[in-house]
Structures are given as structure tokens and as C-alpha cells.
Length: 67
Image 1 (cartoon, rainbow, N blue to C red):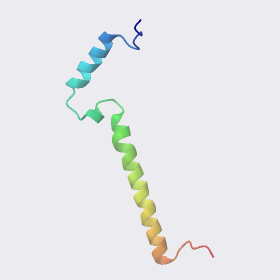
Image 2 (cartoon, rainbow, N blue to C red; image 1 turned 90 degrees about the horizontal axis):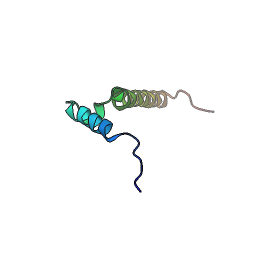
Image 3 (cartoon, rainbow, N blue to C red; image 1 turned 180 degrees about the horizontal axis):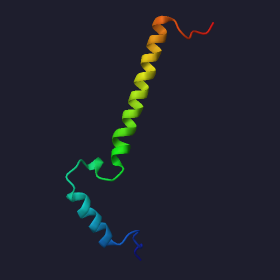
Image 4 (cartoon, helix red, strand yellow; image 1 turned 90 degrees about the vertical axis):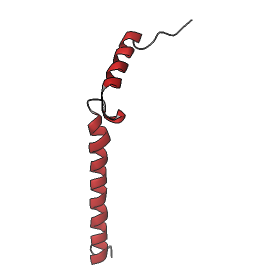
């Protein structure tokens, strides 16, 4: 007894041909992949660099110390 597939085989073959025909990197083939692969990591890197820079500035000037 075989299990019923989630999608029909014809649809899977159609998607496979579509994605294999695109001449982009594998991780940038979907419509929202630029957001998840480029924008979110860039925003995280920028915010962490800002916080690290602010911390170094505060430490070097003695700002924000608790008494």
C-alpha cells in the first residue's frame, strides 16, 4: 500500500524544470529569497556593529557606568 503524495508528480516536475532553468544562485530563486538571504542578515550585521561600536565608545569615555 503506497502513500498518497502531497502534490501531483506533474506539478513537481513542472516546478523542478522552472527552478532548474533559472540562472541565479540556488538560494535566490524564490520571490522572497532576497529578503531572507540578504536583507535580514545585513540588518542583523549592521545593528550588531552599531551596538558594538556604541559599547566601545561608551567604555572608552566612561559613559553609562553603574555606581
